[in-house]
Length: 206
Image 1 (cartoon, rainbow, N blue to C red):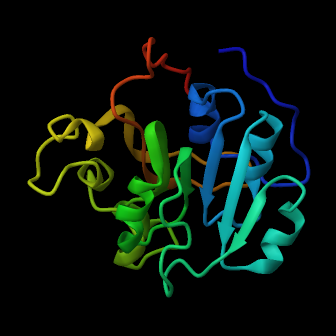
Image 2 (image 1 turned 90 degrees about the vertical axis):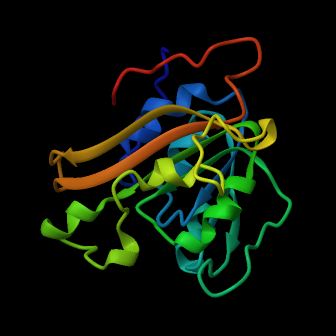
């Protein structure tokens, strides 16, 4: 678990949730960063030796990332999913919620791959933006995301659709530096069982 890419100075620090679970990725993993914004996780994951596909609708934000990732400008809310049939070792989503994308995000995780997701929860409305319900997760919603259509548990579905939840958290994070306190929900889950031939080693909290 000795994982320490070089410090980053030019961009905002990565989410401690992403930092915590990066060690679960295989070497040179192919990672999809959805709604990447300024690319704080592109920088982090590239420093760790991974190959990144970064998607955002803002081409100006993607331009500086071209040397670190394959970039794709796409409006994820007004157009079809831009990567049909493509799968990745991990799909990373932070501070972004568009529920219509959930099926595509799950399908983009390769068997044995990871979904690492963190965004604002309903209680965050009392702290600041976002406040609109469509951008805030309902209690336990990320767990519900991994249940099948019959409402069964993530481990009750067929093997190809089964999800192994490694960690789930919901609650208030204290302020850290320039980042104010916030209410979040976050999950890391593997599509299928634990990594072949090994257990998922739990990482220390970030």
